[in-house]
Length: 159
Image (cartoon, rainbow, N blue to C red; front, top):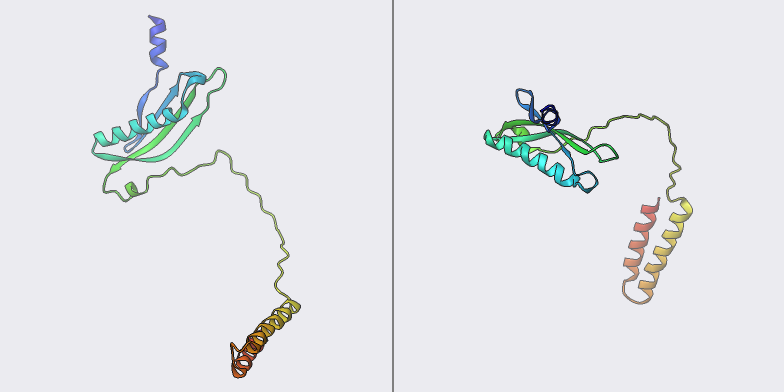
């Protein structure tokens, strides 16, 4: 009789009310290394959603915490959620906000050597562009007037 009472006390507690609209559901996968953590999580979230739907509402995830299976410990998944009306603006954004267990801040100055095109590159590009225009003029594809006009445009832009 004592062994049966002990097993009941160690079972999954089901949905636990934390505040008027906030609940927690936790579960352990007792299959050990043969367990399926994805199925464990999916089952817990499914049960939370069904609980909310039974009240005509929607489950809004707040946070989750999982521990993997390791020797002497079963995998567990804890899910905290709020139950809100379907018309509640929060019901439209239902994603878990990742929360860090530990926050490490590091502030440091960094410097970067940013280089832009220097004048020699501009002159080289300008020279190349004028040569292209001259080639077009020599092939008769543009007139002398068009050549001069485009050359002046390039020279003005280069200043």
